[in-house]
Image (cartoon, rainbow over all chains, first blue to last red; front, side, top):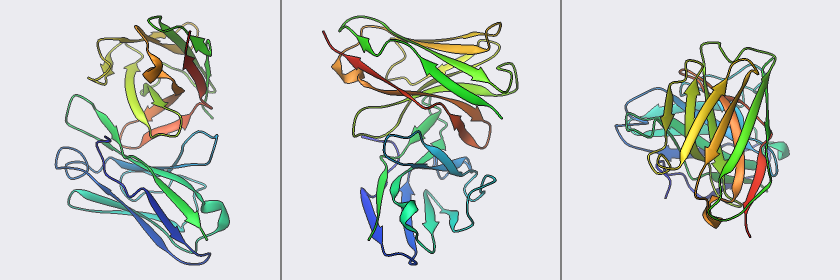
Length: 111
Length: 118
C-alpha cells in the first residue's frame, strides 16, 4: 500500500479539466511544500511536471497546475489533450525515515 | 543538460544480488544534489529505494534497508545499487534519478528491467 493516496483512475474529454488528488499526512504532504507530480507514458520513464506544490519546470505547458490544502495536494490539467493520457504520480518529502514517498498512481484516460 | 543511464544484468537468480550502475553525463556527480534509485514492479507504482550524496552519505527505504547498498564512484561520475537476497518480488524496472532539493526527481534514466528468476 502506497504512502500517499491517489484515485486509481480519472477521465475527461478533450478540452475539459480534470483534477487528481493526492492525500497524505502531516508528516509528508501537510508538513512540507516538497510535493511533486510526475507524468508517465507507457514504457517510458516518469517526467517531472510540477514541483514545490505548484511550480512548473521549463517546457511544461501552463495547462498543468498544482495546489495543496492541508494534507491533500492536487494536480489540475485544463484543456485536456489526447497526449495527456498517461499515468500520474505524486511524491512528497516525509519526515519519516523513508524520506520520499510516492502515491499509487492515477491513470488518466482522455475520452 | 544532465542525463542518466542505467546498466546491469537483466536477469538475476533468486537469493542472488542485483547490481546496477547509473552513469551521469552532462554534469558532475559531485554537484550539490542527491542521487536516487526508484523501482516500479510490472503494472504497479513507484517505490523509492534510497539515495546517496557525493560525500557518500546515504538514506534508504526502511523496508529495503537491510538488503540495499548504494555507493558512488566520483572518478567515473556514476553511482551504483546493490540489492541482496532477491526474490521474485524484486522484479521491476529500476530507475536512477537526480534528486533536486525542494524539487524532486529530475531527470530520470530510461529505466532497466531486472527479472528475478531461475
